[in-house]
Structures are given as structure tokens and as C-alpha cells.
Image (tube, rainbow, N blue to C red):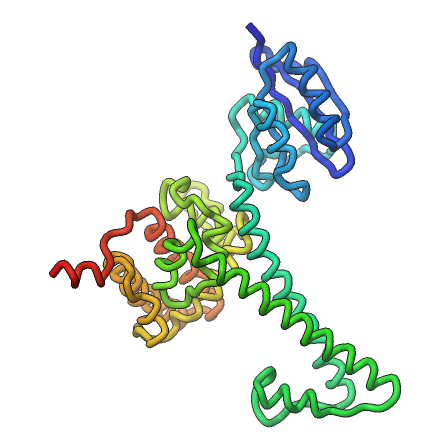
Length: 372
């Protein structure tokens, strides 16, 4: 019978450093350095598998989940570790690839590491499309700043309303420059229009994806909540996917980095800003959605249209969320900065989102009326 060995891997784009630790003694029994290619990894793993039953792990990072899928295809157990939750000694000042690989193997053997959720190939495709939209959104914002700065340096500003309205676009397209400035301005404006067209196309792809299985039901239920439309719902679904892996709403809030930092000892309790660990994409869209709750509870025509045919329990929870989150925003906004209030509302909204996604869908409002 083969003995169990834990393999810690420090993964880089070009090479992978491995440390193999015996499961019983915890002693280092082998070290490997191989290229980060499928053939090289398979060669090393086949040699190790002849002597040991392997338990591999590596930190989540820029190399994604490619190595994970290689090992799973070989039938080798592999875990992808959350980097921010790896224990670190305060006095540790030396960091090398060999030390990192050995540290991972020892901590994995001790059960001190936290695994991240590895998406399937289908889930990763959806996540890629959604993240493309975020990238294009940042590119559009950068191009807008470049264009406005170009005009500001020449004393030009639109004073007949808000920027990026139809009137503002007519103003921009009507400006005329001479010489090299004309070429520069044309390039800035053309670049912005091109990025906007690509952003619109990406949003269209997300819209098409949201009405397909297995996204349709989840997205439709999330859209019943104020401030959550298709794009926000797709970010939440594609990034988290399995909400039931969180034991409670508090665990989900912590995963999003929306819980406050805390340093308490004895009778003293000190809380600071939010941790900002975990998934930044979900945290951003929830904070954006939280600003909608500064208004009094109401159901607009658009929200009412989105709620048609959805489960009664979902509609009731969305209405309860409006009252509670508006009260939180009003109460905190009266004595703290509005940005702090928005983050607090986003934290509570995350709790409602978790409760909605782990709840079993009941009959829809239309079905109940038909039954009656």
C-alpha cells in the first residue's frame, strides 16, 4: 500500500517548485523543479505516484486553474488555496520559492489552509465574459477622462447640462480643431466611441447568457431586488455560483470582505474599516446597488415588471429588504459619512442575496393566483 504524501507547489508562469512531505512524519522527502507545461508536470507526477498517494495544493493566482485541471485529469487530489488566508508568522522575513512550497505542504498536512471554489469550464466561460465587461467599463472611463482633460487644458467645458448626455455628445462631435490637435482630438473621440461599442456588445452577450440555463432562474430572482439588474445579477452568480457552500449569511459577508476589521482584547473592543478580502467584483457591484436604498421603499414600474411571474417568497424578501436597508441607510447616513452607510447597506444586502439563493424557489405569484 502506498504511503500518503503532501505536495506543496509554488507556481509561476515558467516553472513550478514542488516540496513533497511525508504524511506521518512531516519530513521533507523530495523536492522537484519542473517547467509549467502539461508534459513536464505529468512526467514528474507519474514518477511520484509510483511511490506515494499524493495530496497536492497551490495558491490561487495569475496562473488560474490550469494546473488543477491537469492533476484532476490524472486522478490526483489537488486543492487551490486562498492566499489571503494562509497563516504567516510575524517574525518571518525570508521568502523563497523553496520555503513557500514547503510551507504549503506542511500547512496542508496540518489542515490549516482554506480552499477556494474552483469553477467548472462552463462557469469559467461565463465569468470571463462578465469580467470582460468590467475591463471594458474601466477602459471607457479612462478614455472619457483623457478626452475631458484634453478639452479642459484648452479651456473648453460643456455647461448646458451633465456630461455624456445626448446634448454633450452633440457638443463633442461639433468641436473643431486645426492641425495636429485635430488629429489628436479625433483619435481620443474615436477611441472612446470604439470602446463604447465593444462595451455594448459585451453587455449584449451577458444579456443573452442570462436567459439561458443554468443562469435564467437565479438571475430572474435576483432582479426582483432594488438596485440589482441583469449585469449585477450575472456578476454575483458567475463569481459565487454555489451560495450553499457558505454556512451562513455572515460567512458570505466575510467572503466578500464587507465585515469590519476587529482587534478586541479583554474588555476592549476595537473595530476598523472593512477587511476588503475575498471577491472584489461582487463587493463592488453590491456597494453600487446599496446606493439605491437611500430612497424610500417603493416598487417602480421597471422593478414591478421584473417581479412578474417570480416566486412569492422572493418578492416578499425583496420588499422586506427595501424597508430594512432604507432604514439602515437613513439611520447611519444621519450620523456618519454616506459612503460608510452605503457599505453597511451592501453588507446587509449581501445577507439578503445569500438567503435568496439558498432558499428553495416557491410557486410564483402568477401560479398562486391561477390556483386560487
